[in-house]
Length: 424
Image (cartoon, rainbow, N blue to C red; front, side):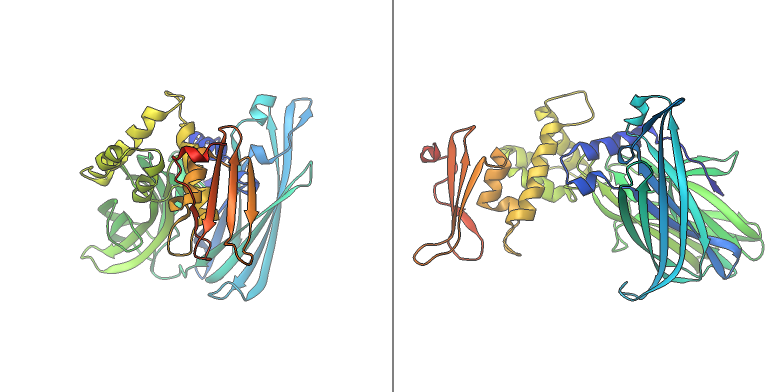
């Protein structure tokens, strides 16, 4: 199986574009994706670890050349054997390879496309930490990523490789375009997965493919087929049909059984389903609905929560935000993005331990409603006075005073948010 490096399909390009347009921290905008898939190598007792990287053009510096524009980069990979805690490391091997990306125009160099690259190494079964470093060939700027992998023993008479997510598969050339990400969008109707089954002799087995929550229940998809295997390597690409998948963590699992249902081998891969355009901020539909409180009326919240199923609630949630979309007809809803960016920021800054999430505090509400203040006066604890903060919004001529009545960081508004006494 060889990897074919292709431009991202349009739906995935749109998803990635939507994610990076949210005002995230610099490190989040500059991420490159990595993945590792263990398959049986030339020796059954030494699996082959195929490693993949997806490098966005936005990370690279394209320079003018006679044929158009060109970028160069180098990926270095250090492999360490680790214990269960990933703290004890033993260096195993290094790999380094170069890539050159030619494009015909400046517009292509500035596009949201990505380059995909792969390498392979033979390893023994065990736990490993893969440390990647990407260096731009022009600016020498570097980026790093780490991924922990568990390489299973694939030498049994019947075994199954790791599961890989696939963007495209060409049966004619037996080549695939790896997704190089475990992220799915809530509007992905289907995904393709690649795996190999290994057999010491010809046999018929039952193959169960499923997408479930980590607790093993709440299956989003399942299929059960009987498959004839030939001796040696048997590659498969399967399409898993998904509809109205809620956000959260799921497990893509391939289980191999005898025709009678006795377990033989299994492999699984965690995937993260996130909201398109809000992957860094929204993880749970029920939380996202509750967090509407600062923008929605009670009747809106009651209507969304009264949905007959998660899918119905999701459709009502989307319809609510569609009414507020400042640019209807486009893929992005800028108002929803900004709202949940503020929710996420409030959760990170103003949460009160396990008592209350940041969005549910007075400071969180003011931030979500009005954005960041133009000026903050902070007054820490002093004799005779409790800690307090004064937030000033010159653009709306409002001033809000928060007092920490308990001394545990739970700052509460001195005057209700709607009170005209807050006017400057």
